[in-house]
Amino acid sequence: MKYLHTMLRVSDLDANIAFFNLLGLSEVRRIDNEGGRFTLVFLAVPGDEAAQIELTYNWDPESYGGGRNFGHVAYGVEDIYAACAHLMANGVTINRPPRDGFMAFVRSPEGISVELLQMGARLAPAEPWASMPNIGEW
Image (cartoon, rainbow, N blue to C red):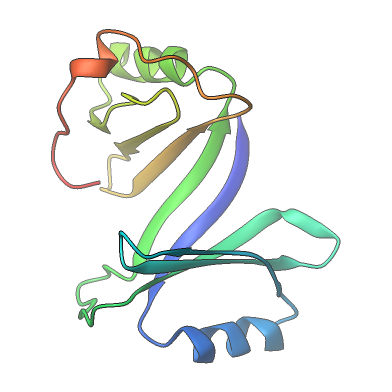
């Protein structure tokens, strides 16, 4: 398993980028998703891009009360299906199963969302994951 990033929802993308720039982080990549109406900006300390902050800016105004501005912690796994099967066998709820062979979300005992991403190539859809519904918010 490899730590990937921590996601923060922001209402002022430019101000937050400027803040993290002051801390010494630089933008390493940006994704504008017109269909989903959001922008993702990944920042890291130059020379240490292994630990990133993901700023998520939703184009439609939204209030992030109650700690909703903290999104999730993300880890890359070698086999997303095996990782989810192991977690499920040990009582962990899979809130967003890896139907696409690439991404899943689970929750910590304190309700923190943890994203699991397949390292390398996306795996082919497989059962029981392909037909498993989402459980709760992820």
